[in-house]
Image 1: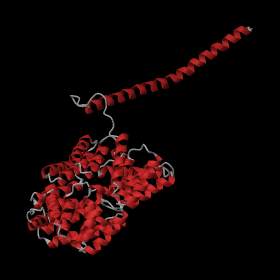
Image 2: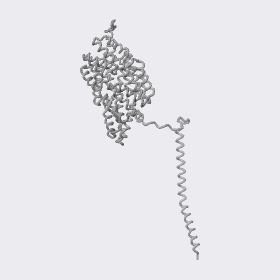
Image 3: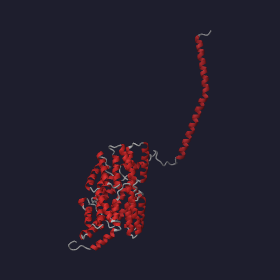
Image 4: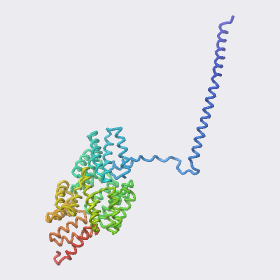
Length: 488
């Protein structure tokens, strides 16, 4: 009889033998899986290597480190819009699409609503399509509804919208509210400068510029400073500052915008070569820079390159239907004796003014100028009186004075013409058109000495300021003749 110990030992040996048998049955499957893993790994490795060999050129043309990913299409416009700088139309479209998609997912994102509104404002400016402005207002008001307190982005957007609509009183209100919420937000100050300038408060615009320059520097600030310098009659300082702004610009669209303004200043000085150079470079950098294309038309007409001038104006108007461009082109046609073509542009102007009004844009100034010279001077006076009550800037004073002259109210006309050119009232800008208007009013009143002085000044500032009015100014000087011994 076996002992207990022997019995236990026999049992353990049996269990060990059974375990070996089970392990032997598993081994083929394990070996199969291991073999399959090796084969698959080898295949993947071969494919990876083969792919590298196919894709990699014999001589590496890329750096070892991969390039940084390109920014999203909306990113450039986002930077520009939030800093009050110009953006290209395609970039604005991308930003608008990006923000709209974001807001569908996050409808309570106050900042995205504000950015969307600001983008619509800039798109409206770039295209002269006033239908953008109601969309902008809706987005900005939604931002304020979501975040009613301390929402400087939306307040600035509302100020920019009012400025784009030429409602400078409302622009001042929104900009001052933004400033109260955050006095150190530098992007508010340019909006406030524009509002003060439109309202004829030039001392306030200068103080605001000084504060802006204390807070920030850069191309946008330099460009705004150039505008204030120009209004003060500091033509050389304005031109130099704007040139610096263009050189320091961070994007082609921004640089093109400052070059367009530099071209406008050169035009106002009568420097045709410089003006054309600036306008052409602006269009090269940003083919959608329609203000520069209209500027090209202005300069080319003065240079006698009429066919090119007409073409430039047409392109600008087709892409940016601005009433101001239509008035310029119509007057160019009229100076060429093409009355029917001029009439087409003048009708186009009226239509554009109506379309702008539907978007809340005040185009009374350009319409008043048109009526004074080509329509109903009495209607021009009525329109411009109302505009003067709303926002008494220099441009309105000049236009109202001229409309009064055309309507036969020469004494009152002179008061407004003097205000537009009187340094005590901020009329320090050296404008050929303003001087011409004052000179012609003085001539009508028999003030030969002052008339002669101001007409000569107009032609000295810019001998090409208008294809219609330059010949009239020259003829008037001929009629006045040389001054007598007593200076009259």
